[in-house]
Image (cartoon, rainbow, N blue to C red):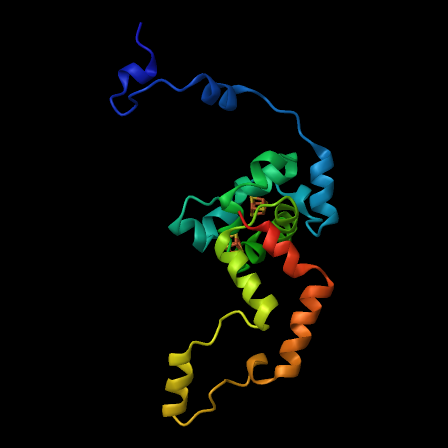
Length: 193
Ligand code: SF4
Ligand code: SF4
């Protein structure tokens, strides 16, 4: 008798024992983690009934393998070990499309935020996000000003720095101070993977 993987030319190898176990083993839900998500802002996580409207609407999912419905389900089941180290968690652009379309009123972006906060505390953070957070904590702004940008602004007759926190050194110092007092600078230094 041929196994399915032997009949199908596109499946060259049988799944490993670990893969079979991961697919077939039922796992018990872990409500303690779900409670953490709820307490962290994902209060509507248990309202999801897995219709998939969010995934069907998600612009990020059109470009990547990210499926927000799965992320919400794993959060519901409390599968911390799947969710926190997952790269998917950082693929949401927080565009709010799914949030507006969900028929159950699940506050999906709040769930993503709660999960990201828990992930950072557990030492997981996507590197691009960490870099942006580092820039904010050091300069008070998301995007650093390059010398060539300043020169170009000068040529166009504009101030060298735009009217943001960059042009207000006192405000910039305050942002840096706040990041230091609340430990944000240390958190992102330690949180990058
Ligand atoms: S649209 Fe709402 S109810 Fe449907 S799967 Fe997404 S979160 Fe769940
Ligand atoms: S908020 Fe995030 S998950 Fe929802 S549609 Fe936008 S990118 Fe996708």
